Length: 111
Image (cartoon, rainbow, N blue to C red; front, side, top):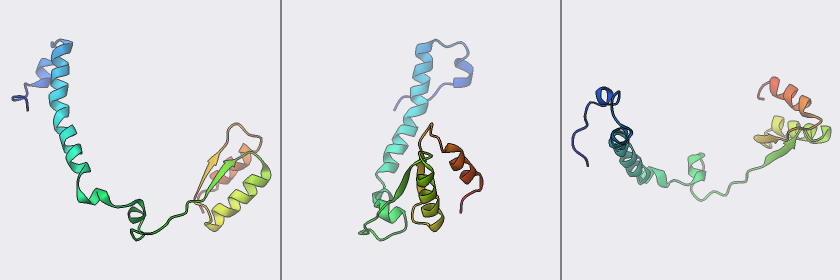
């Protein structure tokens, strides 16, 4: 690791770009090293299922409502699925003829 850091606040006002790059490298190196070390910690080895609160061997099924706003029938079915908890995410297609209906649903807040 490089030697002691100079007073960065004092020297950067008059420093050349090359000196400023050197200062930035000295400042960033400890952060890079810390993040690399943290990524190797055992806690990071948990599966997505475990991170979502399920046992390690669980199979997960994600159901997503796609293309809200494309048609009234799509909106009605998607809103029903969202309200009943069948799906927990949805995406909006832009621009579409029924987008104002999606906006009105969103303004009502989450269920």
